[in-house]
Amino acid sequence: MRIDKWLWCVRIYKTRSLAAEACDLGRVMRDGATMKPSKEVNIGDVITINLNPLKKTVRVKAILKNRVGAKEVINYMEDLTPQAEYDKIEMMRMMYFEKRDSHTGRPTKKDRRNIEKFKDTEY
Image 1 (cartoon, rainbow, N blue to C red):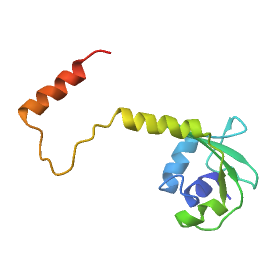
Image 2 (cartoon, rainbow, N blue to C red):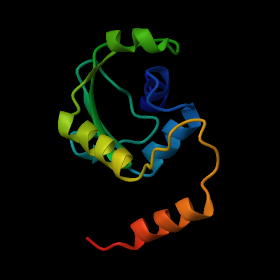
Image 3 (cartoon, rainbow, N blue to C red):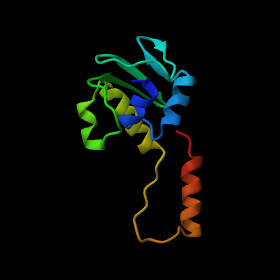
């Protein structure tokens, strides 16, 4: 099976054309070498996918014919991505997200000034 089709079937990419584009841009690697979309994938291959900023590493457990449901993906690939990569994503999400209480409405002028003052503070 082609690598672009396999990446789409196991739901790493939303469309097959996005998977093929990632291969063309050198974001999909096997054994340190970039893969073209037409390269064949085999059982046991370890594939590294650069999903900026996450570098996902997966092992091919089985070849499939069609796209599978999200719950069935674990039967076809094994996620070898280190936990540090997922922690990095969580840290980035927490750093760039400001939480407001729900149903409080829009910020007032005073709230806006406080937010601007907070953003301008140097650490």
